[in-house]
Length: 315
Image 1 (cartoon, one colour):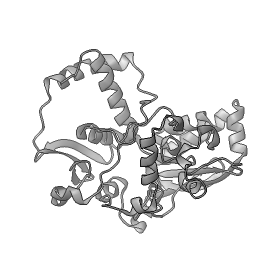
Image 2 (cartoon, rainbow, N blue to C red; image 1 turned 30 degrees about the horizontal axis):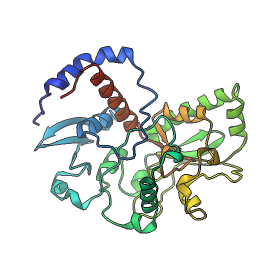
Image 3 (cartoon, rainbow, N blue to C red; image 1 turned 180 degrees about the horizontal axis):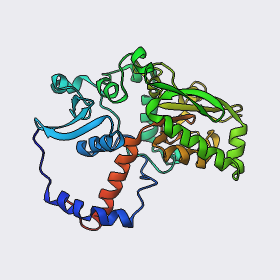
């Protein structure tokens, strides 16, 4: 496979890489609450390689595009669609995967412009969600192991989590156990975390289902997401689509009026490679999903941004 050469700027960047690792913190992540910024193909694919070393064997340059080898299956970047070779020229028939810089803080609805509010209203409409092409599921199926329900269920294990038994993908069994242990330790000295545990309602892991309003299967269908709901919400919002049914200005509900786990609980998940749905504009306050590649993408961009301030890696 042809390997694309590094530019002069990239060589400079790599030369300064080890120095910068000592001088900056890679965590927490970028504070920019962007939904879909332009992210370079190689950085995304390398993020997958670092996040799933047992599944991704290589990232390289071939036929004028970046490719990733997942368990012996090769996928082309194809303008963010991640397609097998036979479909790479038909990339316009598919919806791109979403990659973003995972924000440090949840977005402040007060900062939304009228244009952004209108965009969210459009995105949130049932008509919009059913329009246009869909993702090609081959990449995720290769990465997570399975295309059909029976195949995916072969990857599931049962774990005890915060006093409940849930089913999750075996690749996150250890991470879930680490989160459970950390939250329990925190509860001994943190009254907010202790109250969070006391108010726990339901906890859900694996659940074979399509994403509401689409034909796509969710991360719950792979056993890579966990939903945590309290016994009592009061009048607080927890999920944008539920709120949308009673409030056309659902996107402007303030953070104070949304239910959220304690910050220490969110951090426990994030430190194990999960992202929290409360940091999305289409908020899902109960939802955590395993997306370590997004943390890696954010780390890369933090490094690139910092290096450029030193005049390294500018071209």
